[in-house]
Amino acid sequence: MTPPYSAAPTTEAPASLRASAVLLDLDGTITDSAPAITGAIAETLAAFGYPPETPEQLLRHVGPPIRDGLLEFGGVREEDLEAMVQHYRELYTQRMLDVELFPGVPELIRSLRAAGVPLAVATSKMRHMAVPILEHAGLADEFTVICGATADESRSTKAQIVEDALAGLAALGADVSRAVMVGDRHHDVDGATEHGIPVVLVEWGYAEPGEEAGAHALVRDADELAAVLGAA
Image (cartoon, rainbow, N blue to C red):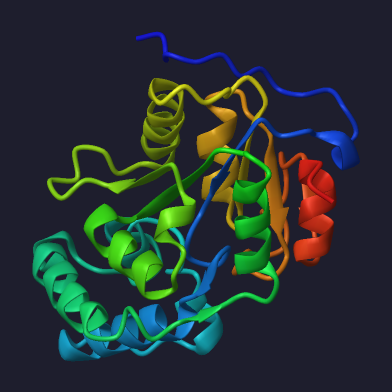
């Protein structure tokens, strides 16, 4: 199926992307959600008798879909998976609003919107969780569309969510010809690259060394991100 947008990879220098629209990941990009996520993961592994993980190992679960992380990193058996996902979500829902925002990011989001740049959230988190988190942070109204995994998980991969975000923006009249994805993990790079849009990876997130491969730029703070997006 041909997506209802056109967004070819840019060949311009990172400092002059001149983004016509910006898609942002949530965990590790806007919110410092690692403590809430890793705490719930650790308690879930313990509840089902799995070995404890170090803080560094637990960070690997922040970003990918929960099932992928439990299978790949937690060594969870298929027969335990669904019960563990449900247990994790019950724990996480109780603490998901208790997160910090990364310095400078809310201000950049508001300045981009004030400048007329259409914004979308493209997160692997369930959309019905992402919306209240953004509302609690006072940022939900800054976004033209908020896209995440569907409740039935028929749309759950990063590529699918990026596609939904681009399509949602285009349907509302946004120019996505120079859309840019901002994220912190290789899942963001892989998902956006599948749709031909450049990715800016932020260093303040949860990526391990090497995950920046394929990204258009790697930035250290919100000021550098603004410059790369052409918003400085």
